[in-house]
Amino acid sequence: MQTVTSISEMQALAAGLRAHGRSVALVPTMGALHEGHVSLVRLAAMKADAVIVSIFVNPAQFGPSEDFARYPRELEADLAQCNAAGAHVVFTPSVEEIYPKGYSTFITEEAVAKPLEGVSRPVHFRGVTTVVAKLFNIVRPNYAVLGQKDAQQVAVIKKITADLHLGVEIVIAPTLRDPDGLAMSSRNRYLTATQRADALALSRALRRAQEMVSAGERRVDRLVAEATHLLAQHRRVRVIYAAIVDRDTMEAVREVRPGQTILALAAWVDEVRLIDNEIL
Image (cartoon, rainbow, N blue to C red; front, side):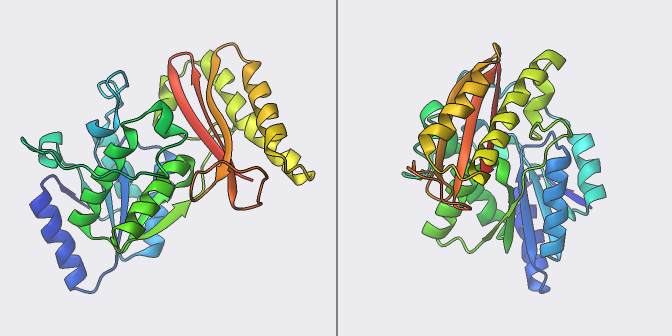
C-alpha cells in the first residue's frame, strides 16, 4: 500500500492506473476510521481493481463553533486499517495542499443541500461538495463508495456528480451499527457511557418507525411524532430535526413511499452532535 501526500503525485499515480486499464474506486474519509469505513474499503475492493482511500479532515465543512480542532486524527491506526482492508493507495494531503494560499473557488448545490443539515449547518455542504469535486478531479475514479449513514451527503454528492458530469458511479453501502444499535461514527468516541446509553434513543426511534411502517402506517405526522416522543424521553437528548423525506431530493413528503423515503434524525447528546437515518 502506498501513501501519497501531494496532489501532483496522486494525479500521476491514478493516471498510471487508468493507463494500464485498471478501474479505480475512491473512498473519501476524514480519518478516525472505524469498522463502517472499513466496510466501504472492502466494498470498493469488490467493485474496482484499485482502491484509493482519502484521509482529509476538511476545514471547509466545519462551522466556526464546530469541532474541527478536536476532530480525532489517528493517521497511523487509519493506515493500518486501510492496509488490512485491501486499500492500494491512501491519499493524505495537508490543508495547505488542498486549499493553498489564495484559494477562493467553492461549489454549492442549491436544492438537496438546503433542508435538514443545511438549516442547522449552513456552510457544511459547501465544504463537502468542494472537497469531493476536488478529489474526483484529482483521482478521476470510476467509483466512489459512500455510506448510507450520511444520507443527505450521499444525495448531495450524487446530485453534483450528475449536474457537473463528473463521470463517477456513486456506490452506497449500508449503515453499520454496533451491537447495541448505535450507528458507527467517528464522533461516538466523544460519548461517555452514560451519554451513549441516551444516544441509543436514535436507533430505537428508527426501529420503532420501521415497525410502524411494517404494520401499515404511512402517515408522516404520526411516524415523526412517535420518533420525537421517544427521543424526548431522554434528558440529554435535544432534537435538532426529525423528518421523513425523499431519499434523493431530501424534500419533505406526506406519506411514506417504501424504499424511497427515509426517516432522518439529528440530535445533540449533551455537547455531541449525532445523525442517523433509516430507509422506510
